[in-house]
Image (cartoon, rainbow, N blue to C red; front, side):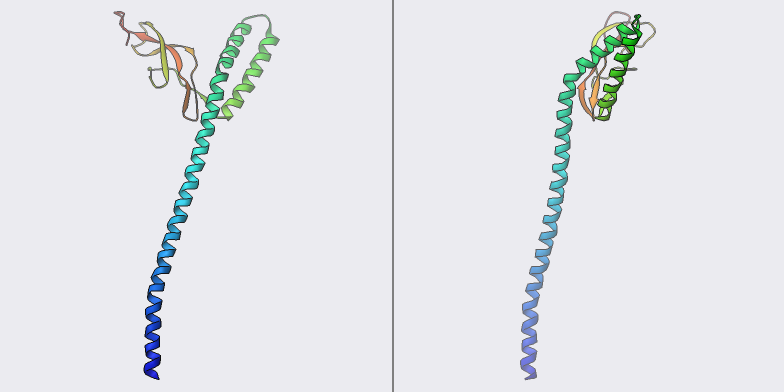
Length: 166
């Protein structure tokens, strides 16, 4: 009987061994699947945020001409006798810009050296005070939204004295 119990115990060990391997394989597959699903959720979340930013950028691209007109109105009324109108335009413009900045809009820096990734040259002219390739004047502000270029800054840059543009 002891031999029978011993044989039964050995058979039980043999049957447990493959079962144990199946459990660990299944556990490993489940962990891998859980990790893949977590990565999928992160990728999807990032894609959704990027799509939102692209949608905002398209909307803001349409609003930029309105911002330009506000700035022109501020300049025109700022030099006139209609100070109350000027102050009203300034307040509306300020509120609009604050809202757009909270949404992620930022003005592109347009001073110093010309950067082809941020600026668009609309004119170059001789300026003996500035080195060639330096921005002299900003004609139209440039904007980006969370790293997405909406519009480059339109600039005038200094050129060489002999008349050749940089």
